[in-house]
Each structure stands twice: as C-alpha cells, then as structure tokens.
Length: 252
Image 1: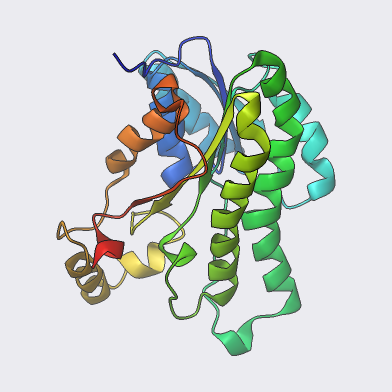
Image 2: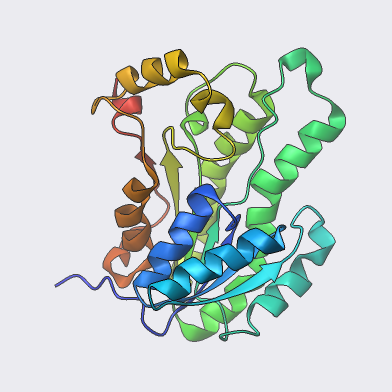
C-alpha cells in the first residue's frame, strides 16, 4: 500500500502567501507535515497559518525576501528553528512581469532569473545537508507551460521556467542517491496573482480552457493530489521528472 502520510516531516514552502504555494502548504499540513510558510507579506502569512490551524495543522511564518541571495543561508537556518530540519522544500515563489521583448530591461531580466531559477537552487543546496543526514528529502520545483511552450510577452519568465526543468533534472542527478528526490510540477492556468491578467480577460480564459483536453482551466484543489504524491514516500522511485498538471493542455 502506497504511503501518503507526512507525519513527523517538516516542509518549507516559498511563495506561501497566496496561490499555488499557499494551497500546497495547506495540502502538506493536512497530510501531517509541520509547515514553514515563507513569503514577504506578514498579514497574508498569518492568514495562511490560521487556515492551516483551522484544519488541525501546524504552521509557522518566515517573513523574508528571497530576492537577496546573500540572505539564503540565514533563511535556511531560520526555517529550521520552528519544527526542526527541513525534509520537504517547495519552491513556489516566482515573478512574471509580462513585458514585451522591447520592454525587458537588464534589471527585470535579472530579477526574474534570480527569483525563478537561482533561488530554488541556492536555497535547496542550503537544505540538502540536513536532508542527507536524515537520509530522506524532497525538492519540488514549480515549472510552467512555458518550460516547453513559448507565450507572448514572457521571454524572461519562459527562460527561467525552461531552466527550472533542466535544474530539476540536474538536482535529481546530484542528490537522488542521497535519498533526496527532485521533481517539478508544471501547472496549466490556475487562478493566482501571477495569472490575474489572464483571468481578467474572459475571452482569453475561455480560449485557454478550450485548448485543454479536459475542457477547463485549473482550480487550486487540482494541485492537491500531485503535491502530496511527490512530497510523500509514495513517490520514492520518482525523481528528475517534470509533470504537467494542465488538463491536457500540452497533449494537444
């Protein structure tokens, strides 16, 4: 029987104030993990903690800005203070400025590639030694449809998410023998802060839904099963995979 329980495990979820990260944090907590929620907005972090505690889960807030890579060692150390060493890392924090090619600046490019691609690696590397010592760990990255498809006004974002796919494979090659599996979820269109411009355009939203094999866009609860699978012992033999959770968008 597959083991989907997370009792006794400790998770760190970045980008946990809203959207995909917040939903994934709730999923892990409901499965028994103690969850450290990392984000920049204290009010939203406390709201997420209240949501988790309302279903009997355990959570703590870590208010920090991941944009400064020099702070990552301290962030990783602080994350372990609430419940102990981190067993599960979900890299859900991200940014998409949706700029036309001509509007991309050196600064916006660097901010995008830093938060979406560099931070997941450097933060994971800080946490791997403790996972290795425990002989078990999970790294779950958030990829994108743009890991394999091109969309308008998203060149920097697409580059970062293409990079996340290869980074996930490289993480798996480096760390899976230590008992640490590394996989990525590539969501389709879900209602989040990053996709707000899409959800404000009903015609575009309907077009995207029609592109899926299922015939609808995602809802946040669609993330629950795959998140729990990849975070739990049930996925012990799955690593280096980029799994599209997109209703069949990439199948058509």
